[in-house]
Length: 318
Image 1 (cartoon, rainbow, N blue to C red):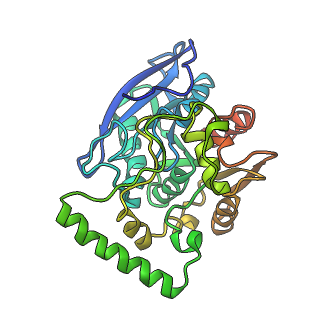
Image 2 (image 1 turned 120 degrees about the vertical axis):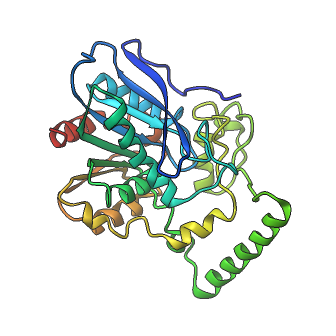
Image 3 (image 1 turned 30 degrees about the vertical axis):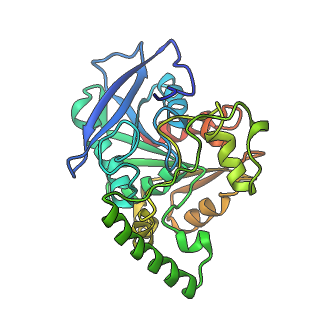
């Protein structure tokens, strides 16, 4: 049983559970947020908000969607294919193509099924891993008019993250290939979750590991961000897809649509945003949040620059 949303819904915001189908025929589960006092006969800008890699719509996205709905944007969150309440089997399979496709499928839904959305004014906020996939989607889907990333992670940059030399890379590919034989023989892919099936009561109760794992646990493994549908990690052989794709390969083609890169000055992931910013063409902007670590931009209202996001999308979704 899922733990539910990590933040209570504001009394002035409506949240509707919705579903939509991607171009592969997989049904995705989503939530549509909008202010209760909007004119449903009107036409409003919309934002699609993607969860961190392995996360669900009930975690960080609900914080962003609820707040941006109060500020006049129709906001949509969703669970990725094979994740959460969305369809797709086997569970916990990851694919950059499918995960980027989800953003375009959400654009399909908003542009056809929600009559009070102006489909010429649709933007995206991608959090963590979704930031990379949203940029990948926007590089080919010109219906996405403006993109903001928060604590960007490029999950397809396995070579860079793991700092693999040729020998190590060959060994990894060999191991994954053999893993496919084992998965086939077992009738299901190997999946090793990163987080417990029940949250630790507090940060002080967490096991001590390396600094980055400690940081993930301070969100996903405690009541702050725990969700039963977000156990972390994906099937082992999902790494093969990430080795085949570069999510940022065509980021320069997003121009002249604008990109806003939001990240903390002490975030361990800062280099991903800096690299993506360097690869993108104008118009582009960096917004560095002082004192913020990576997970602060998941849910911490002290650090999430909602005023900046409102200004960026108001300006660029005219």
